[in-house]
Image 1: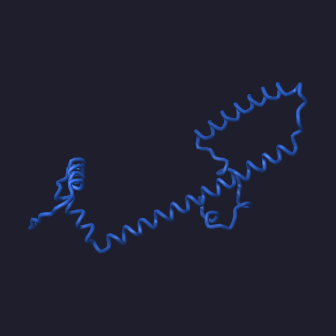
Image 2: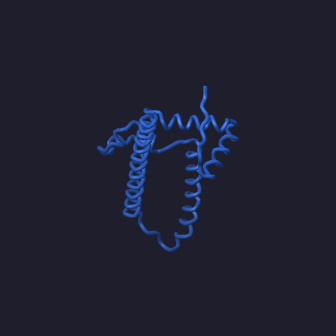
Image 3: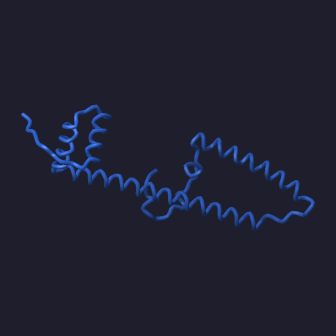
Length: 144
């Protein structure tokens, strides 16, 4: 047996209820019943809080891994630039044009190789053995 009740809601909330009812092809009464039941359920908020905590934990681990990967990439690039600037001698003026043409060609090859690797899902960070450089932070201890 069901009891009838009358409820007053703001017009915008009624429009949302009607839209949801039409989209889901469910009666407005069924939607309101489910919403009230969920609201009154004593363990509903605890389940929601636990699910939210799990999501936040997962997001925290993902952000920590991203931070670690960005740090590795930044340090790698900085060390490469420092090394390259330290050991690469300057070119005489008559060799500049030839070197620039070769540099453009090598860069195009680099970009093509990078594109192929990214389209395959290949990642240097997945291939490289970083155990020796991992810091003792919570993100480093997580398995990827």
